[in-house]
Image (cartoon, rainbow, N blue to C red; front, side, top):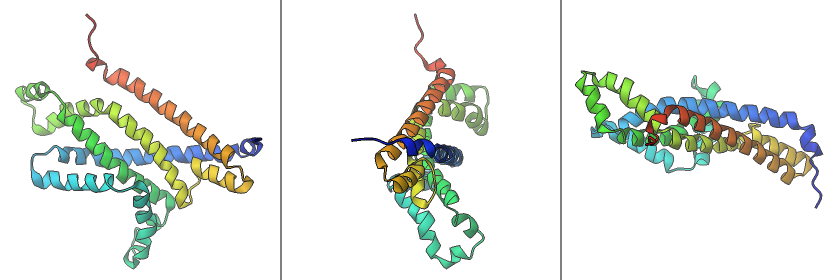
Length: 232
């Protein structure tokens, strides 16, 4: 079997454009998802049922349905309703990039909310009691103690979610976007070289994954150092 990577090299700008698009999708989705996940995570740890239940239902439904189904519902499904096509949101909902970012943000917000809620539940009671002892209000307690501590403790679990979202962005190629996977599909269809095209895409994803792992390891070393066992 002879492999021909010459078309890959000649189309490297297409792959590099796909890498840039993948990173944009990832960063936008994570930013929007985290903004939504913080209030959802706080709702999930509430003892009041009317506050907890809607957040539980949201995360249960989103985590219980495939990402591809969610993307199809937003990009293809909403277009069948005349009220959506006639609304002011249609210029956005008819855009593949907007729909992809929206679907990815919704998906990651549900997982991130559960990660944050789990981290909030593991905060030592002593930290909370100490904050209350110096007269902190509930808002200040969450702002200065609980949320910063929970976000730091959630880093190891959140890093896995970020990597999973990186791989999930490959679904954007299904809605006509030329990300890394989209570039591989384009080259594969033009030159009939599926192995070369997709092995190159896999290498790009692997490189980005290693970069993210390294960045999170550095972040954990800086912000979680106080949790490391002390040397005697």
